Length: 358
Image (tube, rainbow, N blue to C red; front, side, top):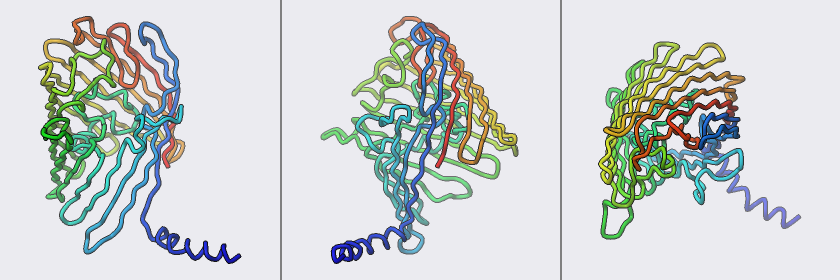
């Protein structure tokens, strides 16, 4: 009994501190079957996790400091619910790992975090809005870095709002001795919101090993060319959205240039979100033009039915058509994001999913 009293006495201060801490545990679970008409020349039935939103487990918290200053942190781990494996091998907090301060001066954060382009353009991208079109709507190879792949070793600053206008700047250190450019990221963006209208613009300069499409596109479906330590990606984009009461219309125009291959690529995306009762209907189309090489069109329609505020069923039908050549000079294969490459320039996929948010 004496040992129990001592244990309780030691635990009380920790319990008191925990009781006053503003910490939230949250997450998303997303999984369902997919039918693809052509993966390497054959149809495929598979169980896919995180098609609408990547499954995740996160922790975030705040502590009020002097005046209006607040310390905050966020740790978020992506994983595959179909296997239980980490979404990124050997990286526990693959989606977010940052700590920072915010107040009248704006917000500054340090760690592994979303870049400024994501802050500015994700609200106008169907792949990031999470209402139905899903990650299948991501621009081929994520060439413009709108799909959130966090930046390591970074510091980000967001200004206070000036009449609805915010500026965001991010620097990702390459950590290469004797070369401050290698593997580094320099990124700036503007965001604006006024009533039903919102807009964003960004510019990103990214060097080295971070500039790879190999994990996102099979060689047969990659029209951009090889990238590596000597490469530099320059990408810019603008986006806007307008909420017409029940209908949200959104769009993006982006351009990227890869220094090593000299390839220039442009994407134009337009989408619509229409909630009606427990249903949310959506449609999105993207045309990607790789100058003097290829054209890729991706069309997606979707429907989500909300069983509650936190749980919904959804269906996504995606179609991709690719024309032109890949970097090797052979006919370009179609490849919807998250799926394997087709044997030709066409690919169709139907995904049924269940998503639960907590």
